Amino acid sequence: MSYPLALQKLISFLRKFPGVGKKTAERFAFQIIYWKDLDLTAFAELLKSIKKDLITCSTCKALYDKARCPFCDLDIRDSNLLCVVASPKDIFTLEATGIYNGLYHAIPGLLSPVDHFGPSDLHFNELKERLSRHETKEVILALDSTIEGDATALFLKKELEPAGIRVSRLAMGMPLGSSLDFLDEGTLTRAFSSRLPV
Amino acid sequence: MSYPLALQKLISFLRKFPGVGKKTAERFAFQIIYWKDLDLTAFAELLKSIKKDLITCSTCKALYDKARCPFCDLDIRDSNLLCVVASPKDIFTLEATGIYNGLYHAIPGLLSPVDHFGPSDLHFNELKERLSRHETKEVILALDSTIEGDATALFLKKELEPAGIRVSRLAMGMPLGSSLDFLDEGTLTRAFSSRLPV
Image 1 (cartoon, one colour):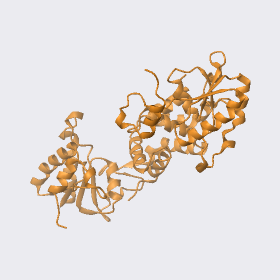
Image 2: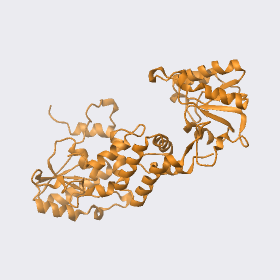
Image 3: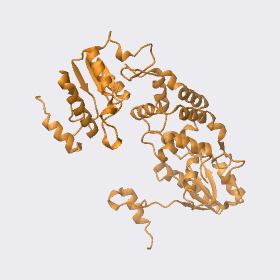
Image 4: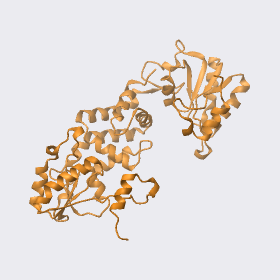
């Protein structure tokens, strides 16, 4: 005896979520069906309208619901700095730190030969156009510390530095609150070679 | 700059899912907003109708969408056996094994003084009424192997055995495919003391 059809459908939708397998989707589904009617309806209505409620900025690719993109507002942001991220989500993650007040630019992804994502997919011209428009002094690469992130950083550095733009990348080392014996060798090596005066 | 309002709302709904914290909900949300319109609408419609599409059996508490509960159909199920579970979901998990063809009874939860869930919350009378109706020979307790599961099993055994009903519980021991050095001491002790001839 398998799940009723509606429940099967619900489970298959929940399995679309990143990192959610059969068991987790089943747990989610069995919780959802006991939600209050009011919550279920509100959730459903939100899903139906979410795409209309969010605007993707044509310049930096961030999401916003205001009259114009708050991340591209030159009255409040420093146009000398441009931070390159690989996903619009990362813009919000960085904003949460409060350390940065420059502009953002989300590239469509990271270089990955396995996924057939090459240099032309980076839409480099869009980035170049912005740099010349704002007369950017420094480009900060806030990319994953993975092979794909490294390759993309190297590519962008090679393309940008001849134009006289300073290119930097987020520091790599020990995460805050970590203990030495739980760090992998790669991180430890990087933290060692990038050591700083106390 | 925080998330647009619609995105904040979506994230707070997704955080309701069991085991989903802020980070995971954000990852889910940023995937959902890039779903195809067709999928989003279908998901939303399903959520709105799911409660109407599913019937909770008043007898065993399983969910079904047929004319009557397939788990309570005495033409195809063995009424000598009654399997007690702590959640309707567990009925489907057990059914997937194909080993059991008796009746089911979902109690509302497991005894837990911390959660103020006492014997009266088990709705024991409903269970007793079913046992006398079907003249049940054996009650199989398919409960979690936790302190709450142990307490509930003990309580039910004490209540049922004086009535001459055989009460059994799922075996505890090594999970299939497990290696000795990854087992916790409790499991290993249990597997040792319940050892069987080869």
